[in-house]
Amino acid sequence: MSTLRFNTWQNTGGTEVANSTLGTGKILQVVFTTTTTETSTSSTSYVDTACAATITPTSSSNKVLVIVTTANLSTSNNNASANLTIYRGDVATGTDLGSDAMAIAWNATSIVLSPAAMMYLDSPGTTSAITYTQALRSNNSPNTVYAKSQQSMILMEVLA
Image (cartoon, rainbow, N blue to C red; front, side):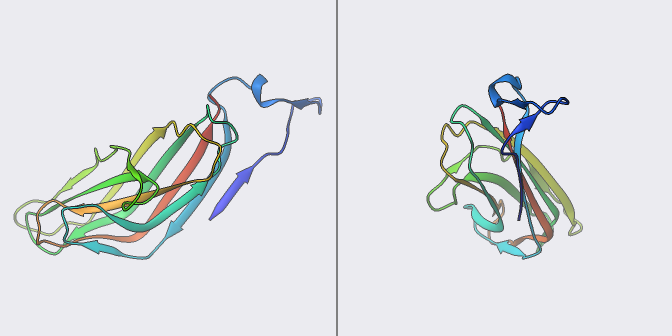
């Protein structure tokens, strides 16, 4: 995991600039993580994948932009599909951010490997550490779906 943080900002003259004078929408920190651990499930309920990252916002009014990518999703059977979503926390205790607009469907004649990506702009309202987790589910139990190859997550704190 990588984290990019700035203790102070300086203008081109070398004078320190307060975050409050930067204006909204500026990126204050970036956290990146990646994994090649495969996750599979035949459950129609979400399960955590191996892709999670933690960020600590500097202000409770700031937002966190979450970007998730999975190199490919696949299925054990024809005519199956999967959903991905992002949780604040984990599946067992966290909050589904309702970001599962990324539904991957396969046709009835072949098993397809498909890349997936999604993003969500969260308003966590805290300065405590927050973990975001990618989660996966099958839409057609008992078919097994897989998040394979490289999974990545980027968290960016956005100045409110």
